[in-house]
Amino acid sequence: MTIRNILLLTSIATLTACSPPEKQSNHAYLHYREQYIQFANILTECGNKRKKTLSDSTIDILKTLPQESIEGFGHVLNLADRKCMANTYRDFMESLLLAEVENYKNGNSDIENELLTLKKIQFMDLYLPAKRKFEQLPANIQKALLSIQEMQEPFDGLDALERAWPKIYGIE
Image 1 (cartoon, rainbow, N blue to C red):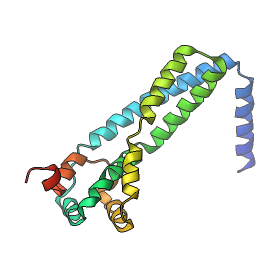
Image 2: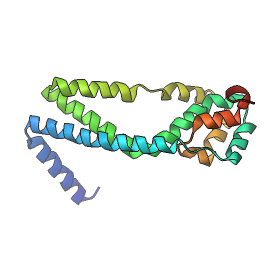
Image 3: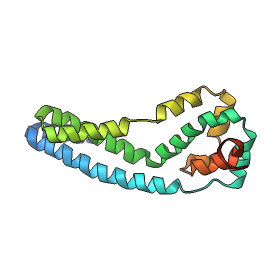
Image 4: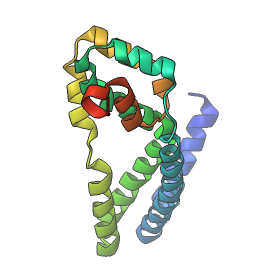
């Protein structure tokens, strides 16, 4: 870290520490609200990308994988979504935690209730069960699913399931 960066961080820390607690708490809440708007926008943008259907060649690859591959499919879909919104999601969660810490110091019950509700929504995660199923698959199937380049971006998972495994999900 350069001396310039150290001085900048020290200056910011000093200015922040000298701010009145209520002002600092309000600033953290306003920052969180700005990040929330940006996150909502990227969530919509990534959701729109989920309308993309996988190419026939990708579906052909999925068809060659054993039926148990379906168990890891949800995890790969989640990874694509998380990759799409990664930086914005990180910034939003960071602002949420900062607002929570500042609110805890200064105790505004309305803000506390809002943050608690939002945390329940954001951490109500269907990600863990899908991840666990994925991790239970043999390593070669995990690798095969993760290596499909087209599945690195959000896509229509239901359409892919119906086309790749029609006996289970579609109409044959």
